[in-house]
Image (cartoon, rainbow, N blue to C red; front, side, top):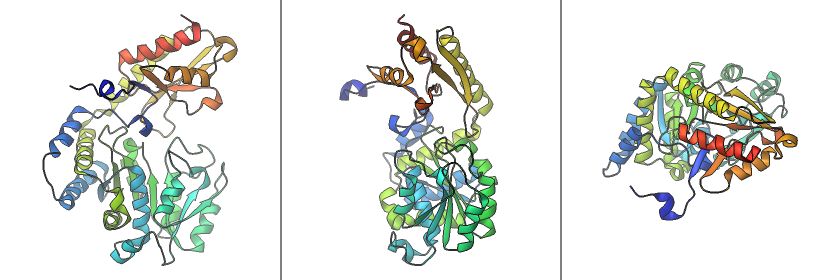
Length: 372
């Protein structure tokens, strides 16, 4: 097999950061890669293929229907567009010029994240007006209630992600209850929350978009699940602004294979394996002077933890920023999870690491902190 790192002069990446778009998503599981590859030499009617995908999505998630988009970001823009147009093709063809009044999308200010681009831009791309409610560290029910009562709201966007403010925000169940009292749909950005998709559908979410290329370990794509009339409207956007966001056959077949794998996957055993690797990280880093160790559960409730390392720069002679930078230098380049570096700590996400890579990561950290 061709070594693509050597062929194109690319550094090898040791991914201790997690499921990141900037690191090209996930390692695609062999059986998923095989199905995507098998699709490449054949032709398919894409409408028929998306219908087949919808059946798989419905069965695995409990949603009424589903479809596959180019990625989560595309799915979010198309979901907003669907709430603006419904299945009115004339309106689909007019977007992003929304001239019929109901064009507001309400989102909590603490959910206005940037995950590589601003989510508010994703919303505006469809032609909607973004209405941010609350303060950056607090949203009250009254904030949302006021906008719903004012009218003109096409949807409420809710983000389930570590990127959001993790305190003071309204939870998803409360948002769904308030929005549905006014017959307003709720769209969930659940990019890395595919392990929770069924529970959110059961909560009454109207549309949820997750990534196929994170914990589902598929080819790049977004999976939209939800109410059939809205999913149909999402798919209809392919005749309008969604044309630039369409999914290819390899993305659709990959997503189907990934969901079928998830359907039979032993999640208890998967969690136990992640816990084992986190324990190995902590064992290998034990005893380094000035390095505090711990493990934190995923903040959004997915069934895994990450190893937390907090170096004391006075003792270790290096702070988290320098440690993160120096780990990333060289070939292979080790990428740690530096989302909280300004708070003085880093995470080691072991999900994409095998035991050999865990040892390599820990040896390099030990060398940088101790000189040995």
